Structures are given as C-alpha cells and as structure tokens.
Length: 210
Length: 210
DNA sequence: GAGAAGTCGTGATTATTTTCACAATTAGTA
DNA sequence: TACTAATTGTGAAAATAATCACGACTTCTC
Ligand SMILES: NC(=O)c1ccc[n+]([C@@H]2O[C@H](COP(=O)([O-])OP(=O)(O)OC[C@H]3O[C@@H](n4cnc5c(N)ncnc54)[C@H](O)[C@@H]3O)[C@@H](O)[C@H]2O)c1
Ligand SMILES: NC(=O)c1ccc[n+]([C@@H]2O[C@H](COP(=O)([O-])OP(=O)(O)OC[C@H]3O[C@@H](n4cnc5c(N)ncnc54)[C@H](O)[C@@H]3O)[C@@H](O)[C@H]2O)c1
Image 1 (cartoon, rainbow over the protein chains, first blue to last red):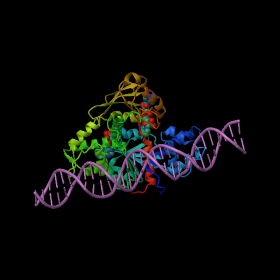
Image 2: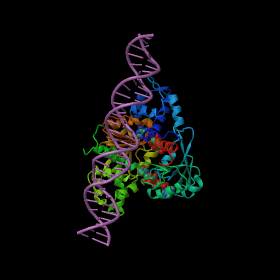
Image 3: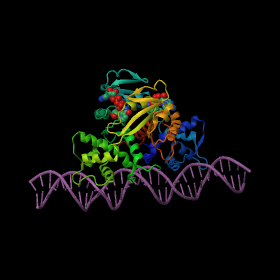
Image 4: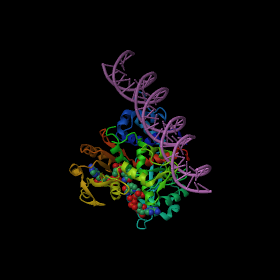
C-alpha cells in the first residue's frame, strides 16, 4: 500500500479538495493558489499547503498550483479511475434518499444493490438499483466490499455479523448503534442525532465568536 | 456561558454518552464502569474518564459511575430540559427523510417547520411538520436559531445569506457547498459524498489492521 | 533585465487530543 | 476487621494536528 505516513486528518480532506478542483476545471480555471482554495473549502491555507506537501512538491513558488496537474494527481491518488462498488442495507427514509443520489458524479463509488427485509420493497428498484431480500445477502453480495447501513439500530449487530462473515472491508454506519467488528474492518459512524445535538451544545456553551 | 475549557473533542462525544446512559437506565442498570461504557460506545476508557473529569469527580473509585446520577448530570449539562427549535430547508430526498425522523427522542431538538421552493410541496405536511414557501422565510422563522440545509448546493449561499440576516446561530449543512458566514454563526458540515470517499480511501491506503 | 508582488514548501512552534500508568479509594468478602 | 479486587481521577508522556513565519523561487510589469 501507499504512504500511510499521511495524517488521517489530511486524508479526510482529500475528497474535498478533489471535488473543488473538479469544479475549477469545469469553470475553465487553469491555476489556483492555496489562498483561493482556502476561501472556497474553509481550510487554512497553511494546512492546505501542508496537506499537499505530503505528496511532494505539487505547486510552483510564486505561481500556485496547476489545476489540471493537481486534479490528475489526485485522481490517481484517490483511485478515481476504478469504481468502488457499494451495497446499501435498509431502504427506509434515509436509505431511499441515498439510492436517489448519484454518488458517482465527482466520486468513484456506486451503490450497486440494496437489501431490505420488507417484502413490499424486495423486487423493486429505486434509481435503477435493485432491492434484494436481506436473506439473500450472501448470495447476491459477492465482491462488494463496502456497505452503507441505514437499518434500524436493533438490526445493526446481526447484519454486521453477516457482513463480516462475508468479507466486508468498510462500513458507513448511520445507525445509532456502535457496531463491533474485527480489527481489519473499518467502520465510520455518521450519527445524525449526535451531530445535531453537538451543534446545539456548541451554540450554548462556546463563546459566540471564535 | 459555561466552561469553555472543555475540549471540543470531548463536547462532541457528550451526546453519545448521554444516549447510551439513557439506554442503560431503560435497561434498569444502576451502575456502570468506564470500561463497560468503552465497549459500548467504542471510545477508549481512559478517554471517557478524562472526558467526565472535565466536569468534576462524577464517579467513585473502585465502584464506577451511578447511572442515574450521571444521566441527571448530563441532562442538565446538555440542556436536555429545554427544547431547541430547528427549521429545515429543502424537502427533497434527504430533507424528507429527516422530517420523518423523530429527533426529540433522546434529544432536545425538534424540527418545527420546513421550507421549500416547490409549490407542490408548500402547504403540505410531513410527520406533522408544516412546509412553507422559502419566500416566507423571514415571516415564519421568527425565533428559530438552528437550521438544517438540504437544498441543492447552488442555493446554499443565497439561503444562508437570508438565514444570517435573520439572526441564525447554527447551521447543519448537508450541501456540498462550503458556505460563508460571519464569525458568530457556527456551521457544521456533513458531507456524505466526502465521507464515503474518505472511507474508500482509508480502505485502500491504510494497513488492514490498525 | 531589474524590481515588485505573489506564493510555495517547510522548519519550528504551538495547540489539541489521546494514551499510559499508578496512587488513592471503594465495595465486596471472609 | 482485614484483605482482595475493582475502578476512578489525573500527572505525565506521546501522538496528532494546526499554525506561524520566512527563505526561496516564479511571474509580472515596466
Ligand atoms: N431518518 C433519519 O433522518 C435518521 C436520522 C438519524 C438516524 N437515523 C438512523 O438511520 C437508520 C435508518 O433510519 P430510517 O429513518 O431510514 O428508518 P426506516 O425505518 O425508515 O428504515 C429502515 C429500513 O430497514 C428495513 N429493515 C429492517 N430490518 C432489516 C434487516 N434486518 N435487514 C435489512 N433491512 C431491514 C426496514 O424494512 C426499513 O425499510 C436508523 O438506525 C435510524 O436510527 C435516521
Ligand atoms: N440525497 C443524498 O443522498 C445526498 C447525499 C449527499 C449530499 N446530498 C446533498 O444534500 C442536498 C439535498 O439533496 P437531495 O437529494 O435531498 O436533493 P433534492 O433535489 O431531492 O432536494 C432538494 C429540495 O430543495 C428544494 N429547493 C430548491 N431550491 C430551494 C430553495 N431556494 N429554497 C428551499 N428549497 C429549495 C427543492 O424543491 C427540493 O425539494 C444537496 O445539496 C445534495 O448535494 C444529498
């Protein structure tokens, strides 16, 4: 594998940079400075330069960065050329919203299939994505290595267990349950209720102008 | 305001602790150790003890923490007794999912109203929450200080501007646009495409067992 | 082609967060 | 009561991340 000396904080910002560079190219801009990037993505310009510098000297002093070059570099770095297949679990409120969304645009990931326990949903399609019965997980999933969980919290553990059994590598978990997985599986939690509550806490307890 | 010596990283974990303590109480448990909490919320036990210690000595050595006491303490700390009113902008795929979700359970926030530009949606209700026309923002919003943005990215700047004008204090932004606000407004970005892409990046570039 | 303005890359510093590790204290037990 | 096992709270260390600040180089302008 690549450089894993790259700080995690940096790695999390890369997709953000990538998307903005894409926008710039569509706008026909050929050159950009860390200051301009900073204004757009709201990350300190020194942090941006530092982030980029982990990958070598990508810019030119006194000039900035060449959009096309940088974009090409990140395309390779972020493996934009190969599509990562994703499976979604739980076609409810949240799951349905994701199925309608086109993650492929500006992104190397595609939801290939969805699973649900509700017989009324099984067999239908949303946005061209087939919905299978959760019982058929093992049969249908095959090579998919990334899962999105939008099932009820109570179901999280049992579905996770089956995913792990099936060789899953990464899980994006929208369930409030904190799932348990072996060390070789990576889980990112996105806990919307917590996010909202944390925002409210910050509003009430942190001074009103940082 | 309160202690703003509390690290931001700690503050973000508080709602998580709160929710789990609630579960414990419902299960009738009266006592819990940092180790048990750690297993449940997947945060190192030393980190949990450190987090709690910012609020004083909440536990007892050799015993652990009293669930009811701790819960009562966090209820006050997290202002669970007063309801924070929230407005949602953009009743599309994502916005509709949120309107169906009951944030009030385990949470002190409630979506009171929604706004959209689509005349077919205006005037209807989802989950008992009225949908107003975006043109009526100033008239209807009044005292609401927290907003959730689930509108198209292209609309983010103009709606944000009006929210700021109207005295908004916090924004939970699901739009890929990085919005610009004055220093006294707090914005939390939740960028789902970035999260997914970051997960994939980690899978490919970080050693498979941390 | 000389001077001015702009911008990177990075050493050094500072800030923040996590983790270690253990004395102090408590509950439980015999 | 005395002993054992459990568990906190925290000083200190380590790890991670953000920021400052400036030399080096590039482009632009005249
Ligand atoms: N909707 C929101 O705004 C929101 C906000 C915060 C958190 N969440 C969390 O996201 C998750 C999904 O929320 P939602 O509102 O979409 O719920 P939902 O009830 O609308 O959808 C859940 C879906 O999962 C399906 N399901 C149930 N058991 C299953 C199983 N074993 N295998 C596969 N599918 C199964 C159900 O049939 C249903 O379609 C929940 O855990 C919820 O707590 C949702
Ligand atoms: N759906 C997803 O899974 C997903 C994933 C990642 C990011 N997002 C982002 O979340 C946002 C919403 O996504 P979505 O899929 O719900 O989009 P959507 O198009 O389904 O919904 C957008 C809604 O906003 C309304 N709207 C448009 N202009 C408005 C205005 N000026 N004021 C108020 N309402 C207005 C539209 O009528 C529509 O109902 C987008 O910015 C999208 O990029 C969505």
